[in-house]
Image (cartoon, rainbow, N blue to C red; front, side):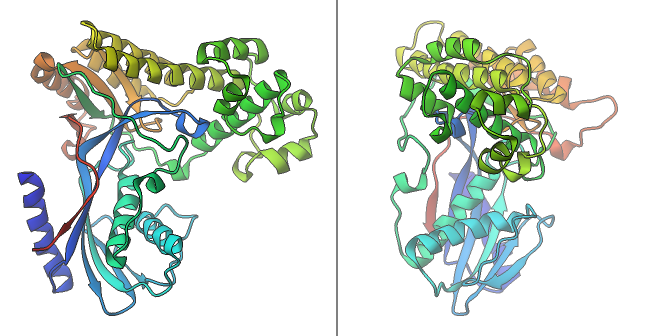
Length: 414
């Protein structure tokens, strides 16, 4: 890990310059790319993420005061000084330090710690922000690890992965191909948009209508996976149920109320979230079709990796292409730049390419045969990043091949 070592030395120097002392330990957490399985985790289905080599690093020095001093090597992110035992998180503003405070406060509350020692922290990250590579999640993980280390505590890994199901299965990826991440250079701030919130609610409403159609106790159902589990049928059969139960035309609130036999007031107060109460149309058929078909693609992807047929890379690529089509047409979470970038990647040798992360900007991930990698990188770079109008600044360019990276870790200062 020579590159990491160089960064640690540089971070140590910057820490000394900032705080006039030497860090006691460092914490690292990687970004991740979702190879396949988009917008289905909050519906109860498994996804297939891979840790990337880009990460967040934090240099830490516990101090005798009860003050948390937080700084970032990137001057775009302002310093913060606050009490370590009276953490206030302003949910109305997506400020960078809120992610750190969330990780700290989560561990603090889990262990019931009321007198946390102060600390000086310097954060350094090389994951492109707002790109769908989980830079914010890496910062939250780092902050949790920082707090655990200061407290001298441990946390089981299962506790850190609190979504259903509570397990992770290793998937052996093909050796003859690499995954390439390309940043569209369109930033999408999830905290500042309603797109994501509406999709979550559309999935919930679709689950309720499907449950009602199949005479299940629909009012208790929250996720599309619950409907499948209660019916005990396959994902392919769920797609057929969706065809029968839902229509492609958008639903308005009144029609949803008629289907469920409830009043508009009950819909607004008992089902819709505050940020979706004024939405006039809901595309339930399209969202359910995406979720069930994408969940099936994840299982097919895993199966192909396990069986490793001769044309493995081609088959995986086809699943990634289908995933992008569904994200674009059924979930409507793409954007013109992502679609263009996916087309360019396929044109220059990717067997498959798709948006990754929430969408509406951010990155694509492509599966590329290893022998085509150099020409692929060169051609995509020219075709997408070398615009004649110079609209994409060089520092925003982000095109790189990646292999599975290491997980989170704590490094003690020798």
